[in-house]
Length: 285
Image (cartoon, rainbow, N blue to C red; front, side):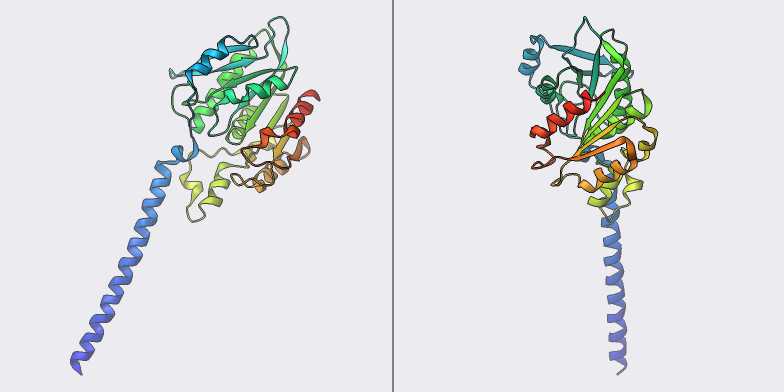
């Protein structure tokens, strides 16, 4: 009888040790995963795309395209293009900010379709042939450099500068609209904040504490008092449409919120109603 009690006591102790070890392992795995998310968040957010050198050369000989090279304070070079500039006249300017996997020369054809405006298409750091590494801080500071450089040109109507952001770039466009004088803000498949989107995707992590690149557009919306157009898609599996709706509500009466039918996050720009919506919005000012 005595030996049985010892055996039962030993088994209970082993079970307690096993449970403690399991809890420790789960907590360790959670901590390691959280650290991984924190250390690798740039690679999880930004997907830089290069540009073919032959395309760069072919764009140099097109009459309506001007190559743009801007030097940042920390020694990097931002490269892109000015499309449809007119040296003889001041024209409205649209500054475009691409998605997280977008090389912005893809937008040249869209710029060609929207008449009456000069377009600035500049690749983020690490994208296209721009140098450096992307981050929220770098994209924000670079976006102001682009604005300040272009608004000083004699062929730009400084009273009519619009910012146009797609997906990730919507957060950059909103940031510029908060810090510089713009006449319009166009946002395609935007989000309220990257923190909100990431928290939805990783509900078990304290994303607010882990995320360095917050892109908090919804917090900036109340500072923006110019017309805003938000173009969203119902079938958005990358950024659920609820995030665009929250951002539209934050802009309030300044915002026109439009859902583009028959498109998803990556094909919205192929829709004829997308192009016509952009043309109408730019033409209204």
